Every structure is written in C-alpha cells, then in structure tokens.
Amino acid sequence: MLISNEEIFQWLPHRDPFLFVDCLESWTHLNREVPADEIVGVKEVVGVECVSHYRVRAEHPIFAGHFPGKPILPGVVQVEMMAQASSFTLFRCLAKPLEGNMDVALLGISSAKFRKPIIPGMELVIKTVCTKARGSIVTHDCQIFCNEQLMSEASAMASVKI
Image 1 (cartoon, rainbow, N blue to C red):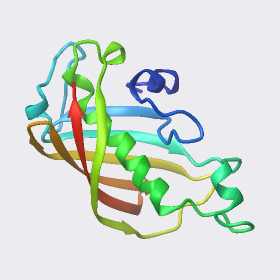
Image 2 (image 1 turned 180 degrees about the vertical axis):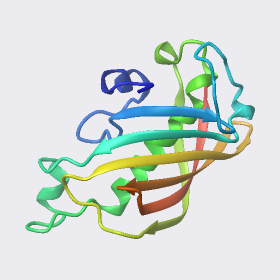
Image 3 (image 1 turned 120 degrees about the vertical axis):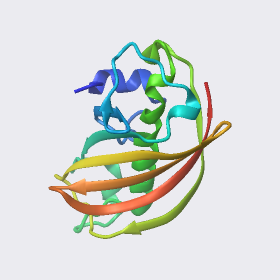
Image 4 (image 1 turned 135 degrees about the horizontal axis):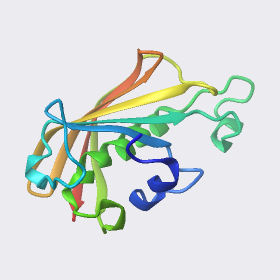
C-alpha cells in the first residue's frame, strides 16, 4: 500500500461522510514503478495510472435516502469517488506530497456510464489514468471495479494549482 487511510487525510481535503477513497495501492508512470524520491512535472503526468480502494459501508448516511430498503450508491457519488481518486496522479509532482499544498477543482465530467449497481459491502477498486495535461488542466479516464467487474466509468477534467 502506497498511502494508508490515515495518510489520505494529508492529501485529500475531504472528510467523512464525503471521503470516498480508503487507500492508494499503486502509482505507475507508463507501466513502470517510480521511485519515491522522483518528482514528475505536471506536464509529465500523462500516462500515470493510480489504483485506489474504497469499501462501501452499509452505515453510510447516503443510504438512508437512496433507497430505503434497497441501498444503491448514487451515480453522483461514484463520479466524486473517481474524481477524488484521480487527484493521486499528481501525487509525485511534489517533493513532499503529504506536506504539500495543492488545490484541485473539478471542471467537468463526460462519458459517465453506470453499468452495475454498487451496494453496501462491496470492496471497490478505482483505476484512474491521466490522459491529457495542458497548463493547469488535467483529464483522467476513470473506472470503478468490484471483483474485476466494471461497475462504472467516466472521464474527469480538473484544474490543478500546485
């Protein structure tokens, strides 16, 4: 595990009940592991793939209203999960990433598809790949899997200030 649950709080500004990443498993650049001390420029993040995890908890307050008796994780939450996970592609742009000050804002979502319902108890794997970086704008292709089955996918665009 590259970043533990406790360290997630040092990277993402989100907190429960709006934090949808439990840990970061891997960070690779064009299919190669990158040494911890190697810094990658923002323009070089194209090709970076991150793999994160999230366990869907039955006690999450969102399920009280979506839907009583048949809880399903809302699509908008799945999109937020993908956006949060995609921010980790920028992790190695800072010399001390867990001490850095980065500002990320979601600008847009396209091609969102929700293929299967996500329900409490599922262990999710979120894969994100940076596909474009122009100036301070980055784009990611994101997918959520459970037991190697594709659950949902989207393309996310964000503004990044490091």
